[in-house]
Length: 134
Ligand code: DGP
Image (tube, rainbow, N blue to C red; front, side, top):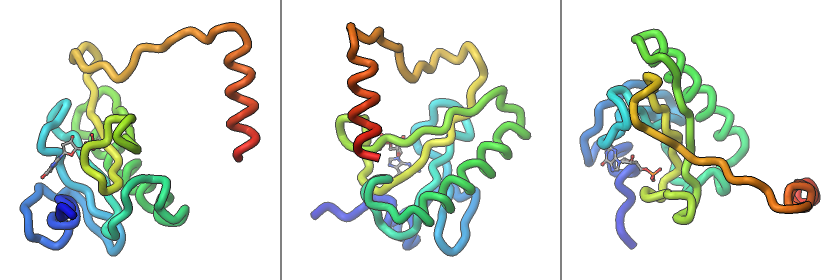
């Protein structure tokens, strides 16, 4: 199995530009930022994605994500996208759970998604299917 890059960063075996650390969570600058200050917030224990993280840890990571986003606004960002890619189909490349905090400046040529239209009763059907799983 390939060693996890982010576990190596946590262990200090690879460098990172750290902006925050506590007992459970680390935040450091993304090596390929969409804009300067793009930060990754990660649990220190290895989890592949949000789906295998304990709820309590999801909460801790989310709180740090908000703190970092607040700080990014205070240094001049006009808005912040907070996102998480979970699974290869969703664009996840590093399989250690991480939240992206992306500074935004309006017309900065970075686009997250283009919305589609629902067909027929597809919207109601998909809502019912999700609700049945909650
Ligand atoms: P994704 O798995 O697609 O949600 O994004 C992974 C992000 O991780 C990507 O924006 C680039 C970043 N990244 C990959 N390797 C490293 C690294 O060694 N150091 C840092 N700081 N960031 C990395």
